[in-house]
Amino acid sequence: MKKFNGKNVIVTGAAQGVGKETSLKFLEEGANVLMADINSSKFEDLKAELSNYAGQFHLMKIDISKQEDISMMIAEIINKWGSIDFVINNASVSLTKSMMEITAEDWDRVLNINVKGTFFIMLEAAKKMIEAGKGGSIVNVSSIAGLNGRPLFLPYAASKAAVINFTKSAALEFAKSGIRVNSIAPGTIDTTMWEKCSEDLSKINDCNREELIDGWVKRIPLKRLAQPADIANSILFLCSKEGEYITGQTINVCGGLSIA
Ligand SMILES: NC(=O)c1ccc[n+]([C@@H]2O[C@H](COP(=O)([O-])OP(=O)(O)OC[C@H]3O[C@@H](n4cnc5c(N)ncnc54)[C@H](O)[C@@H]3O)[C@@H](O)[C@H]2O)c1
Image (cartoon, rainbow, N blue to C red; front, side):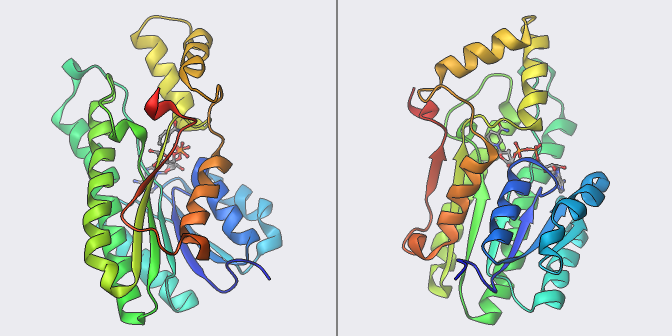
């Protein structure tokens, strides 16, 4: 018996990286997955790659910073599969910039996507979960940058701190409806986001990118970057029966970096 047979899941930022891996693991465990992303250029390849799961997944282009796109996504999953069991709020953008150069537009972009987008998806999905009366699990992907300050990532780190904080408020408010809300704080994951960040960091610090990555990995107690599967495994755990007594928490999936 598969773990998530008949469960309906929204995964945002599903075109690549953590979102793609998480979607795949849910599909393997029998769930129906609405895979949302602003970047639809990978959808055709994804359709081919996931052809074994035809009928079990639905790809949708949305911009999570747009309220009308969020409403369309919620309507789409209800229309297709009737209810929402889990929401994986994973889409986000990073920004690597010296504090001296940060503009009001930078703040708006990062906060609109990472904070407001994540919040309104959580809220709109929770309304449907409450209507259905079956509870649910929401996982907001944050970052250990949201636990500590991080030079050159100020708006991003602040946005992820907001996610960790509102996860707790939402968990308290939704507990009476059986909806659990948790957050995952990854360290550094071997994805396109890190590729771009490490490139920007090496330019700003005027150093060699390979050497920068080498130095970064040395600081991680488990001596490797996270793979998307490391993060996806923790997300699935939080949605599983085994995670049913956990709410309002942030799990640091970072190879020990948050305590180094
Ligand atoms: N990569 C890391 O080192 C790292 C570290 C800590 C936390 N995280 C977090 O993990 C999560 C996954 O990151 P990843 O490394 O897989 O990143 P990624 O950049 O590879 O994937 C992010 C996905 O989100 C999508 N996206 C961006 N803006 C969007 C929008 N407005 N609407 C819809 N989709 C949008 C992108 O198109 C992309 O497919 C993110 O929340 C990220 O902040 C990543």
